[in-house]
Structures are given as structure tokens and as C-alpha cells.
Image 1 (cartoon, rainbow, N blue to C red):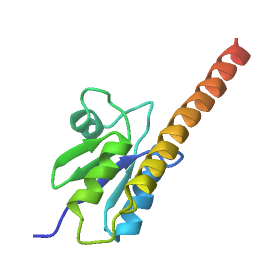
Image 2 (spheres, rainbow, N blue to C red; image 1 turned 90 degrees about the horizontal axis):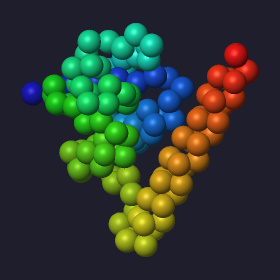
Image 3 (cartoon, rainbow, N blue to C red; image 1 turned 120 degrees about the vertical axis):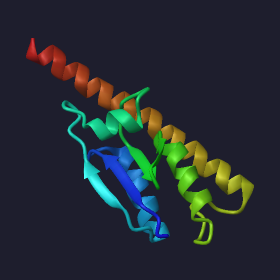
Length: 122
């Protein structure tokens, strides 16, 4: 049976971009479903009922959400392909540090832009 892989995402999302890159690096074919974040699909609400956010990776009907968790899932499930992280523990720690750093900086920048737009619109 072939794997059924679906990615629920919103194209400008840097968190979804992570998963798109990982899937491409691993050579995994998947169906991409662009989500309207203001009118969320029933599939998104069903697959991520707690946070109702993208990205959501659906593998054979089972969801993995949060981009970093989904990245680990991709690496573990498709372990017959080259790993996403280096074998060296120090280099892996460095990669995880930078991923966390980008997570925090991107979120802060997005929040500042959103807050500035909110103030500007008043």
C-alpha cells in the first residue's frame, strides 16, 4: 500500500515551508492543500482540533501537527532516506538551536507587523 501524505498549509507560512522542504529533501510525494486561515476547512478542524492551526501533516489518515514535531515524524517514518539532521550530536544541537531561534524571531516579527497594522487601521 502506498503512503497517503497530505499537507495542510498556507503558502507564505515559514512553518509550512519547513515541511515542504523536508518532504522535498526526502523525495516524498504528497498532496498540498492550501488553507484559508479565515475560513478553516472541516479537514483542518478535524485533524488539528486543539489548536486549529497549520501546518498539519496527514500520513495515512493520521495527523502530525506543529512543524518541529512533524519534521521529526518525517525523519523517523522515512528513515530509509538520508536524515534531515546531521549524525554528529553537536551539529544536531546547533541545528536545533537555530531552528528555535528562527521560530522565536519569526513569531516576534509577525506579531510586530500584525500589531502595527492593527494600530494603523484604527
